[in-house]
Length: 387
Image (cartoon, rainbow, N blue to C red; front, top):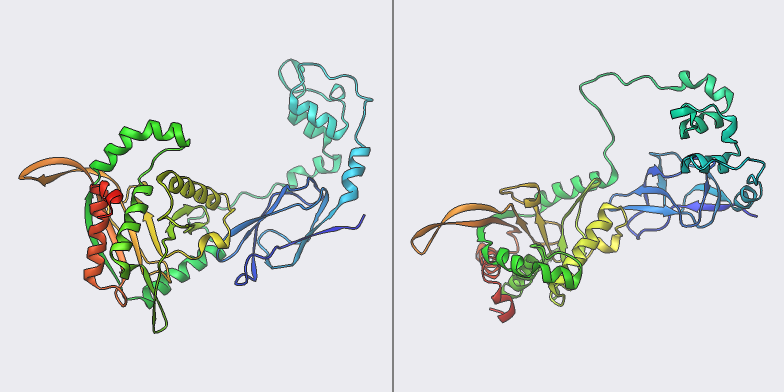
């Protein structure tokens, strides 16, 4: 059978290369079809490559290598899979005792080593997984094992590692946003009492019907759509010397991952119900954190919402996500004393921050937009009535 080439798959016209961040298999392993093989980091996304065929894999690139789209990084020999099955030991082993662990029985089947011939170090002389692994190790490997142990790293005060392509791109975009836009931030505070009460009242029924919890983000997504309709100047962007007005409501939701900040886009938030928004956000966040997000998932948003409150942030000035012209920052909900009808009361309060490009959006529009969001959250009935 001819060897199967494992190539770096295409991921969009703008991506030509990436870093081979991790191999999930070792050179010489027998892999299964659709088994995850490697992780590839680019300046936009992290993706995963899988095996198109079962067989024995030979690696052609190392972890940390920069690889190009279409490059062969491994080959798979399909014949090795069938040979492995044919040569699997059948049964010159004596039956295993019932007290053998599943790991020992599996290693016995894989290596052909009879546990009865292995000196056990477990309780009452029982053979352990470690005993089986030691028995399967070649004598030369055992003799050289000590010399192969790398020396302990020095107890230095610093470590140094290369910035990943994704982190480098994030840094580049953030600096570019500050240099290219006349960015300004305006603030307000919102009383979360009404939303907190609605969640408490309907949470159980919501979970029973939809299988997921009702969060705050769906309320803010609907409030942002409402505000964008009321202040359409915020739903626009600059393209050279032209103003592009958007008439759709695809919202980006910032997600923190181990690889860096990603902003998957939730399409058509004006047509989605609360449950659909919550599910879309949860699915997008999971795919981002699992490294399964695609370039298409990150493109085309008109406005971004970022929630630093989940980390305890009280206040911040978020940076806009080009080519968008504004971003809404949410923060922690804290009980604070506020004046209401001449009385001091304790309410769950949140600070809101709207950063915007002052070249396109005037202060009046920015403040009005933020007030519309505040009104919709403090009186959610406005979202139904449309005022």
